[in-house]
Structure formats: structure tokens, C-alpha cells
Image 1 (tube, one colour):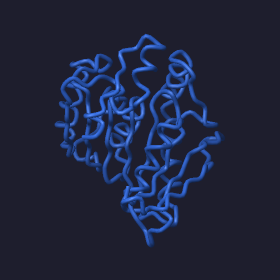
Image 2 (cartoon, rainbow, N blue to C red):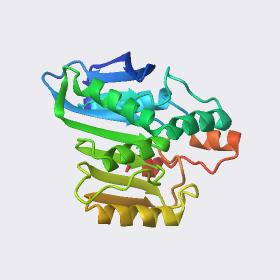
Image 3 (cartoon, rainbow, N blue to C red):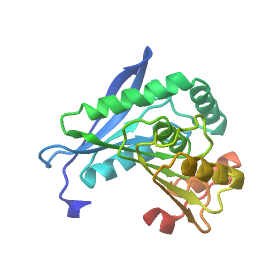
Image 4 (cartoon, rainbow, N blue to C red):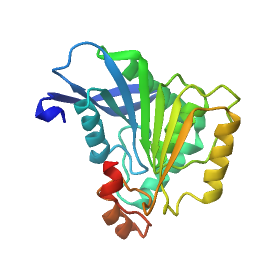
Length: 234
């Protein structure tokens, strides 16, 4: 990044939502002066792990201030599919808490001295994709959201004109965990909401295509996951 010139500074941060301590990871370019756009990075169902921290550092190298978000509380992560599924299910079951945790992360990043508060975006992977799309659906003032191999199912049907964020969905065309009817329903929902969105399906790509650990994780847990280096670069 930046020809090796960026001075990436990282630190673990804590913030609160509903009595829960959330443990995020903040990355900035220490050599860059002034305010810059901020990006929230929302984890896969495994939780806030080294993969998501690395994505935050990569964004800092590109000139953003990035906050890797903790949606599970206390920085919890799942060592296997059963643990991850339990953490994800608990988080999704309490929608008010989920929204409060995302809002707390948004506020923490927006108020950071390096961040231009009017230019905050969010990206998410897997369940994180569902989280950032939900944030767009409920009308949070994000500049944009990007979902990578995320679930497209909806918890909230946005009214026409209520989606403020520009939306990009990066989907694996061979992702068996996101059914075709979910894609069709998402497109219909976005069209009816008059949202500004773009849907890109990458031929041959499966669920988890951005994560180099996807193949090993898939084998360990009997899941149809696969990394795709070419699509990841795109």
C-alpha cells in the first residue's frame, strides 16, 4: 500500500452498547494529515478475527480510517462452525441490540479526530454483509455499503427513498449458501425502495471468496467455502 510509505497505526478500542462492552480494532495512516473518510468493517460469522483486522489495516493503507467492528460483544469469536453459528444466531435474534451495536461502532468511528463525519461507509463479509445491508435498509446516513459474499435476506423493508447509502453487492455466482430466490427478492426490494445499488456476481466464486482461510475452514466444518484469489483481487 502507498508504495510502502504508509505508517499504519493500529490499536484495540472499546466502546459500549446496551451494557455490552464491544472490542474493536482501529487502523489509521499516522503520516496522513487532516480528516479522511472512515470505513466500518464488519466480520464474518467467525467474529472479529485476524482476517478482519488485516482488512482494516489494508483500508488504512489506502488512506481511510478503518474500524473493525465487534458485533458479538467482548470480542468473542467462534473456533468452529457450531460456535460461530451460535454467536451469529444470538446476535441476529435481538435486532434492537444488533442495531445498537452497529450504531455504537458508527458513532465511535464518526467521532474519531481523523474522520470526516460526513463520509463514513461500511463493508461486511458473510454475516457482516447482512449487517451493513441492514444498516442501509434502515436509513443510516452512510455514504455507501459493500457486501462481500453476504446474506441478502431482509429484516426490514425500506420505504421508497429511505435508503441513503449507495449499495454494492459482491456475490459469488456459485455461492450455494445464498439462494437465487433471495437474490431476486433483494433486487425487487431495492428497486421498490428506489435505492442506488449495483449487484455483481463473479462466475465460479463460492461463499467466502475473499478469505484465504476459506478452503481450510470449509474442509474442517463440512461447508461449501472457497477462496478465489482472482476474484478477491477484483
